[in-house]
Length: 449
Ligand code: HEM
Image 1 (cartoon, rainbow, N blue to C red):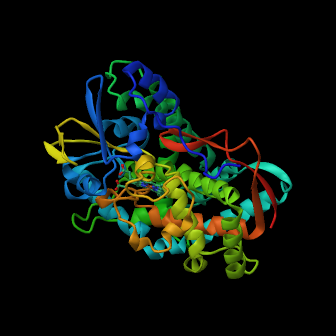
Image 2: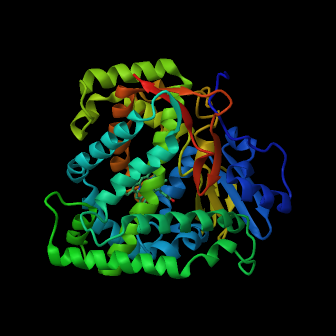
């Protein structure tokens, strides 16, 4: 057994355009040069695009907060996501982003997220039940966590309406993202837009159909009124921009709900799957977390009320998001002449925020590749721009608290019931396809605790 958890081999030689294209198609993280984990900024030029990878907290603060209007999300992100989720919260810019963010913010208030706790507890319980039949065996915990977070996101978006084929909606979205995301690296590398992107061919009918089904569900809910415990659709239907009084129409509601699915489903599953791998990697950490969970839960399934009493579980989630940030690579386009870490930035330059490299940068983190949840014992000791699993500034993830609450509830519940052990030769391999995924799954032996 090695003393460090699995990581992505970063390149140490500068690559030519073709070589980086081939590598990037395999694994975007492999185009991050190793020096990005040792320096504050790395710049280069690929085809026609000048790019800068920024790993310095002060410069990141400038891009994400102080000069945020001059660093819009790059076309890469928009090109991939817009056909699926329209000009919704995730991709919109300027005034159109601002009013949507103001209208949607209350949806994710502490109280509303807390009220959605039972949905998360139910999903945790279902996972416990599924695993009960598989003890003593190797289980792909990534697959199980995808099913678990799917239960949550489908129950808080298009729920309680039997006419909606939730599976169809979610699978269409997942397929779309998987097929287009691979090609997006061609955009990162500045390949001209006339070069065909095979992924774009998947668009037409499946997506249109998905949108039609979603629209029908939204209109039905308008007529029926909210559920007893309002879900995200009910809350968004009520939502209003306090400044302009604008409310979302059906298409805007649908695009934002689909956005929540795209942004919140797989990312949370990844967090949980990587957290379970890390717990298996370090059995002492796992034992300590289990002790905490068993003491607090006392045989029950975790609820939102338990979350503040599970600080060590939370520290494991925080450290997991450092080592395996699901959104491992954010991208912006500079619109101004600027200076980042003494480097000249020109309008049109691509500024990438390689969160994976930032979180493993040795200037910032001690022993960066090691798994050590204790780093997060005092979160205030960590620079807010050195740790960016949810981004930061005004575009920070709107679902961060939702995701953390969900992850803590599910992880604590599972650890209180089961023991997870690595299988020799079957460690997951991190691969970047829009998100940082474990290739081939996260296979762990599951035994009763
Ligand atoms: C562990 C799970 C999650 C991770 C790691 C994550 C990560 C992120 C990151 C890094 C961003 C900023 C992207 C950028 O600045 O370019 C973001 C934005 C966003 N996320 Fe999440 N996310 C997670 C869960 C969720 C959930 C559960 C939801 C909704 C239910 C959600 C909805 C959104 C939305 C709507 C935005 C765009 C916000 C805006 O631009 O105003 N995310 N997320």
